[in-house]
Length: 208
Image (tube, rainbow, N blue to C red; front, side):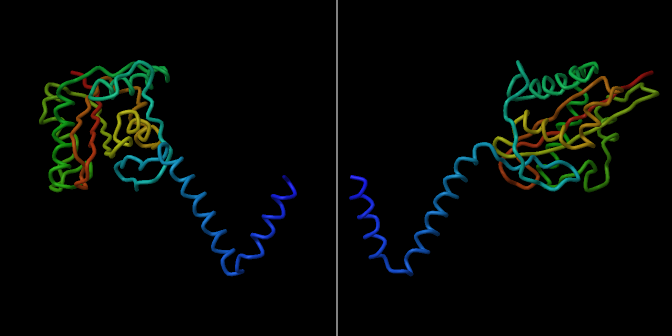
């Protein structure tokens, strides 16, 4: 059987015109690349867009922190506080005024198609946070803000928090030991008009 098989293979090669062989090789190579591409697609997603950064392709882990919800504000609070605890920091307390400021900004970016800490009119985060009542009666305060958006798996809380932690400026805000309060604003849609989710995280500390 082995000899018969080898003889048939050699005969087959002799009857193939020389100009076909390179095309067969190219077709096989393209098939291999397509199969590999399909195999890799489930683990590669568009990186969530972060303020001041260009979108990139990078592997994300959609698995949330152990025991965390997979959607909504509780998911972000759980993910971020798990990271803070792991780094020896106190967890952030939920603050509805920070949530209000964050959600308003996220909705405004989606509605007016811009992506920035400052609005097109130049309104900075502290003005929005003050308008939401968080700074009322405070003589000393410190605030921070991170923004991002993503589509599909890249729009999950775990993926966006992972992207923030892979970005030094955002990581510094999440791991700032001075912050005590936090609130995430989550809005369906993106500043580009594509389907997805836009998220703003406001953090702060105030004292009388």
